[in-house]
Length: 333
Image (cartoon, rainbow, N blue to C red; front, side):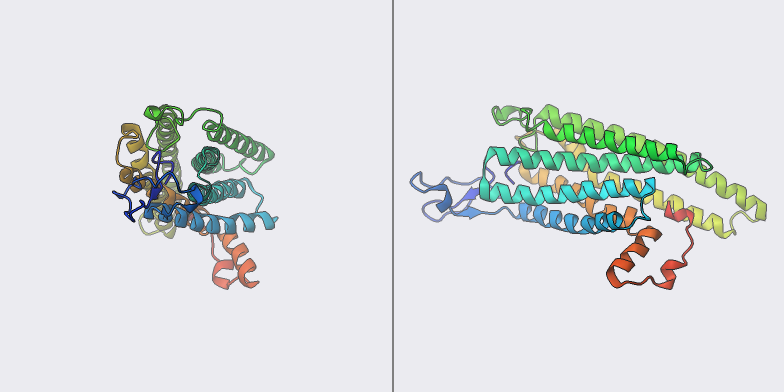
């Protein structure tokens, strides 16, 4: 992957020798050969990232299409889910475009543009996850007044802020904050500088801490409501609502645990490593981070009853009775 090494494309030498290691560094071809005539070795890790990007783009494009075409899905919650899906869609496209540009165009300008798109998209994805968490907390804390014009205005404000900030982060490499002129300042993700990726990593840790705190508060509210309802039935552990509430808390733990498992390895590694570290380590932590965009539609979109109905209508023109009559439970939070 060209953003991991100054020369991540490996060439076949004039005698037919391949790259001398698995990171894409090899012997250079004779100067007499034109760039278009140089045999190119494709890093298998880049193929994995490109494949992940294709899956991410296709999966999230379906979610964006369903929300866009269905007027009933205009509530703040669905707008935030749509924002998440759009961010992941652009991230997937960014990975595919970066692969294409790295092995076909091989220009610094294309590299900066595609890296900027990937940074902006994944930043918007993480910010959208935070916005969804805030929305869920407010929907429980202000249950009686949540569905109001004030909530819609707050949601639009969050969307403008998160996409504006993400765009600014994505423009940094393009506007000169990159290490193309000085390789010693490169981070594990070229052409991002060490300072640039440190800011992104620290910001992620802060956002993760905020999400963790909000989910703890959500769990307290849900358990308190379940306890009050159960006491009215005099059977705390036996009430169906308590069982489904416990499932809801487990769902929240899975959501947060998945997010941390995907992003934490790359975040920590990018803080302690630099461009001198083997690219294999970067790939090994970056690939799981992309999987979060594969999992997001499953957690936030495909499990939602309203989106399930819309998907069934789009795919087969009907809604199964099991989906149409399924009651919403606390496990759907």
